[in-house]
Image 1 (cartoon, chains in turn green, brown):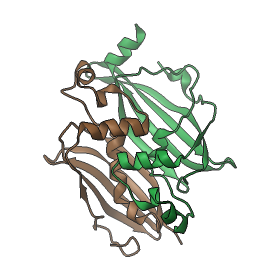
Image 2: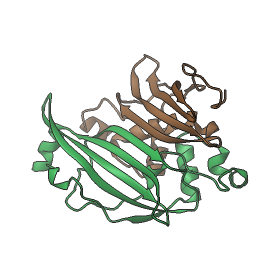
Image 3: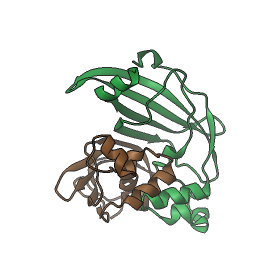
Length: 149
Length: 133
């Protein structure tokens, strides 16, 4: 179904680690640590700035991959990875894109299901990687049948 | 507990969250931009064959990372890797855990997980923490 998409990438999208968005996100995950939200604390920290929680890249836009259209509902999030070379700093710009790392199909209880692996990338102004992520999405047999209609 | 002296088998202080509420998930939808309605609207969850709304997997993972937050000025969590193993429903009570399994110089590897009161595993995986020099 998505075999032909393997290796395809989106165009980079510029995102900003917005102070208000970080605070809202930290609150939503129950982690209002001053390192995330207290400006003076951030300035005194080794980073000289507040940082964002490790799962914050969920907020970023990554652009669309040509030919990869996923249904808005019915997908199952199977697995998630993040790899960081340094924390995300509040106020900085991050250039994000997505790539299709793999797609395979396996026999499930109710038919063939699809397993899609997407890789996310976040680069700084100089093009250096800040983080990479990997998301494994399971497309059930029922959802695959709906997508064909 | 400090990361510099911690030994394999020791745990970070675990956290038990208040029962999952609809407002938790509405807030996460707004903060993350994930508005999949199975996380907030009963009817949509039922149409998807679920007994009720379920938490965003990333909400649970996001909560789990708080175990490491007190240590982020002494080191970086270079890697988080988790597998989602079970669904979280309203009123579930979740406990977040991290156990040191291996220490190799400045790298500390943890088993991380989230379990319900009944013992069901919601997610499980590993985190690698690297001490700054």
